[in-house]
Length: 130
Image (tube, rainbow, N blue to C red):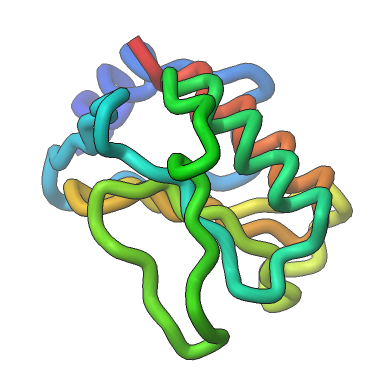
């Protein structure tokens, strides 16, 4: 069982190496489409989170205003075909750079304790792009 993980790590090596990494059972990919993929933030997202969302939108070739979507309410869930960025105080207190990244076929979700963590997570996403 360890051999496939090593192959996947080599294929998707990121710097610095994550403190913890868990591969799911499936080999799902999220496909970025520069015409329709959006970047989503929470309804109460800070100015800095919105700035980071615009950075991600430019990174995927969607640097127009409609590319960044704010959720309508705190209870709302992001659509599919989106990169969802959010501050989440429940992330284990491993420092200001802590973040959790989940990739499914429907969306990429990046949760971080701080803005610094979101920035670090964005750098990981950037390294995973072809």
